[in-house]
Length: 327
Picture 1 (cartoon, rainbow, N blue to C red):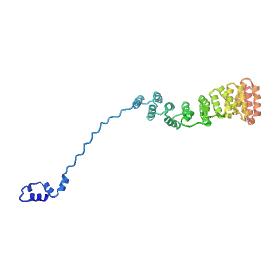
Picture 2 (picture 1 turned 90 degrees about the horizontal axis):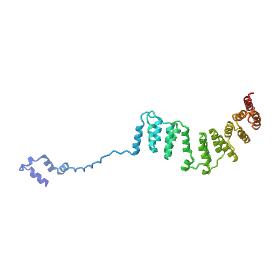
Picture 3 (picture 1 turned 180 degrees about the horizontal axis):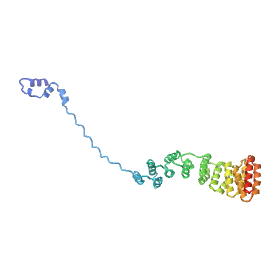
Picture 4 (picture 1 turned 30 degrees about the vertical axis):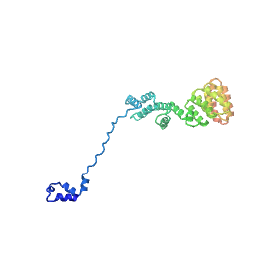
């Protein structure tokens, strides 16, 4: 059919052939090519209209955070930050404020702000965050004050905290806690742990009593320390020499010289000897009470029982007694 149509249109008799556009001639020669060239591609499907992107609304916590940030004026101090932290009921918000302020130029947290945020986190049971901040303090982020030190010990070494994470403390661990409390003069906390030892199946030993006795004497609670000493001796426990000497000096300075002399005698009976300062403290107290002769006699007795005293220390003590008597 295309060949016949070509002959018809190109014959000399057909006047239309000269008037046909070239495209028709191309079609007659290569119909498939023209079909490909002039086929109209289908229209792509319409793109669905994208929904309107609405800005995300702020959470109440973010709103409160922005409010507190605006309240902290440029040049704020650690006291301002501490007040802001104490005003928070939400520990997470307080931590956000704490972290934001730490990034501000010219500002550095001190022991007060660290203490406040750590207490807030512990109260809210955000233990992991509290541990992170405690590690910062230990690494030197701020000077450690006694309240901050106590809080760290209470959190890290508290028997209840250890039990909560599945660690049952033994006597040695509890003694370490008691020793730490006693050293920072938190003796009430030390006594509390001491009284709770039975709950963990632990028995106090000589170290336990010695740590608390020393802490009580250094705190000025000498009568209580002496009572604890007698309790441990009734149980057949013997303290270390350092505990003996602190108790002896404390009793002497409290004018309880008879009790001090008894403790010295007990110490010598357990093959331990006081140092020169401890001897001198008791002897001077006797002299102040007008008992110089008793002091000389006591020194002679101690010399016989204490083979480690030596002639040099003996002469020092004799000269001290003579000086006190105005000789």
